[in-house]
Image (cartoon, rainbow, N blue to C red):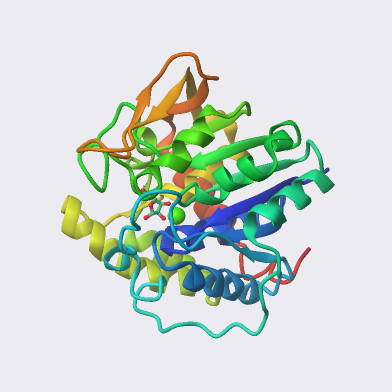
Length: 312
Ligand code: BDR
Ligand code: CA
């Protein structure tokens, strides 16, 4: 069976780390690169964490550093209160020995996607700055990428950083607007579904028992993130935003989509809001999801993360 090639553009980040380890553990996926972006942490921290996560899984996969700031707006501060000062809960800064690819993310993306034309799904799970820069640098890339699966947006749902905006879009609304205007297939996995997809502290404790190294690490970092969600929603739950984007690739049967042209509000009180538009290519917006099946799939696959360590 040919594996689906993926590149994840990421700001790890606790749920990003869960998404990356799920992708590494899944037998139907081949992660061929990570590109990093500011958001949950500063971009240098994101790059360091991405290198660490791959080293933890004993995988030699390139990491390319992306943009440190948004296209136009003044950067928002990193979400340390959600993801921890170093992005991995209360764990100290990791010290990976590998170094990043010398190319900036948008050039790495252009060259890698073109080298596997039509085969790569690009999965941005952070602010969309690198993807907007890719589009500006290489406009024909839309003809070479298989599709984009984006975690972001709140189309017909409330936001999570303001009443209107979801964090990834809010952190670079101009970039997101450019990406939604592009002529490429986009599946959008946003707050319309992800706030209902959750794991419990018991789920992560069990994962830590069956896969003590990587599962144990995911259990450890989930504690900080669950504390944050407890302070916001009053329940001890780990909301699975970023992993859900990867599960949508491995298990499309769990998702229902509506084609909706989108634009992004780039100023004022509603900045970062993803709203219905006209005269733009429709985006496949995920509107329904089998939450419990997605949770189980994530846990079943992640349970293998220690045993497949080092597998290619
Ligand atoms: C998104 O924002 C970040 O905090 C998460 O990693 C996720 O990508 C959810 O709004
Ligand atoms: Ca993220």
